[in-house]
Length: 281
Image 1 (cartoon, helix red, strand yellow):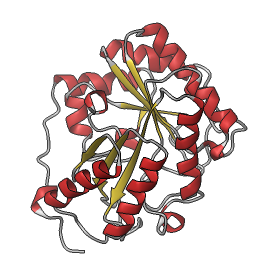
Image 2 (image 1 turned 90 degrees about the vertical axis):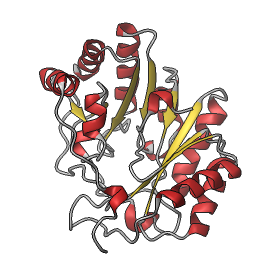
Image 3 (image 1 turned 180 degrees about the vertical axis):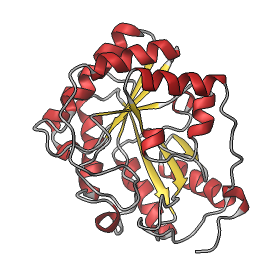
Image 4 (image 1 turned 180 degrees about the horizontal axis):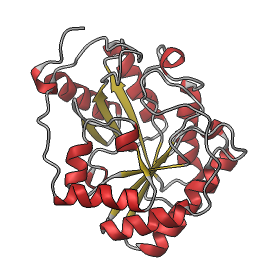
């Protein structure tokens, strides 16, 4: 693949007062963010705006997806104080909307569901008026584990399907396309008022027709929100990018997803799952 096109060349943002404060708070509370661990291209912009996406349950994943920069060394034990530290950090940062995600923890009996529940409870105590979005792994598709998370009433439940059906076995280690659809479907069946969300990365080798089929599948399980962004390989060891989509193509995908029945869609080269989460609609 040739060099990145001009629309994918971002100017490096200076580390301003807000960004420095965010980084300082994260370090002070011994926390991780997916912004840094996953090498998100938006981290400078988000930090400069005083926002970040908290990564719980450690920085090491039990899966090894070919698109992701998260480490996959031996996972660390659960930290019983992590939830309170996230709440303290969110309070110090003055956040009105908090996004919480995690690595996949197939080694834990509850796959990390109770950790999400604890963080939601602690954040609600500290910031009762703040919005909360959780971006969870597939929890093995188990309804009992999903219920643990949704019983705490997050404002948004997010689970990323990431790519089209054909590419899922190659791209998403240990994942299953239908399992991801099922967890989104179950969230709506169990809690009909729950806002649900998913995300796709494009440029992995999918076809336009496969994307349309994915939009239809997500609409069929009543997903409310969708993000679509360009795949950018974190390193030469990761899956190579097949193609860079133009900004015009991202606009076309947005309209096609909305036409399939997904109400709110963010689509663009730098869009990521937590991009503008607080003002999605």
